[in-house]
Image (tube, rainbow, N blue to C red; front, side, top):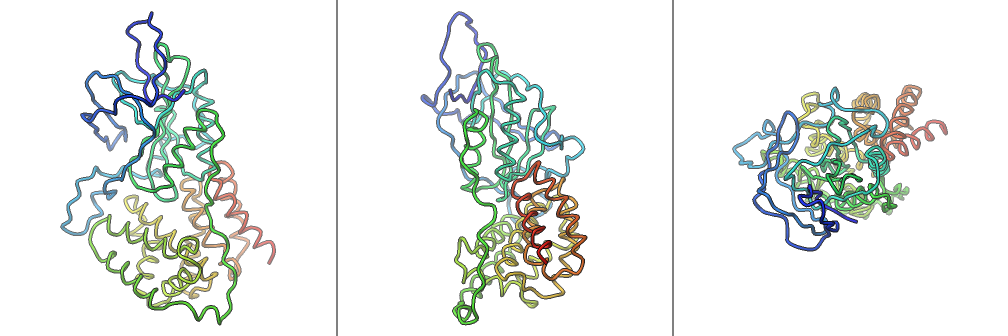
Length: 404
């Protein structure tokens, strides 16, 4: 049975059935307060009996940290919580989710509609199912056993939480699983949330979407002549104007747009290759901005984490689109960063995955493949435990090195 709320039973003699998706909607007078220190959500609502409808997700407000804004723009959204790596001392980083017990659901705690009740199952088993599906879907996760919480970030930079609670009274025999989106918006998140809830119930979740696109085939010079330079110029000019606006949201949207423009699966091979060629040229303003976001130390602060991850996605897309044919100076400047990201794979497996995507077409030019081999092995090990995409991409790079 699917359940979005487990409440204490004031009448033990009455055997009420589990709630279903029918009935009234969720109340509108819930007060939500974000605690930047504890990174928890406190909710207050008068005594009411919630009822439940199918999982619903809505657009997210601005994701900008307060310190990001560079101009007189207005941002009414709550401040973005610190990225995962900032909490590394207080979070469990072992393989999977080693949870032994879950806290009891508090009184008057209205759950999200994206929640299920898993009867006759232990917290450790539900946690194992959740961590398995997060790994298979290549969702970066950090586990807090003290709060029975998983802090998650998808490849599209959607930030969400998975909470586990123990039911009360007639629900004491099961675990409640709740998915809460915090920041970001992506259609794939709906699929991710449903897969998590299905897996928690012991169902077979749908297969994850491909983390990497099909490799681009080599093209002839004559085919390459059909690239429309005008399309590339106008598209990059649009992105350049967006990057010129102050504020986090404009930059985030610009990089999201650019990540799609450089993705052959979304835009077609010719368009992606043409835009990527222009982007990787030495004198391209947008390309230089993206490269700066990736390599400059001033952009490696925690508040730029999502922006930097998107810039890294654009760079990985572009390098793959041009089959690694980028300026030598850019390649040499990028190499130590990619090695560093792989060495830090346990802290940030998603960035390590993107580093592997960049390396896929750069290993053929590398002068010290033994060093790359070592960090790729580290990344593969972390990926095997926590991030399926990282494991597959690291193995692909290792095979390329071994075939040289």
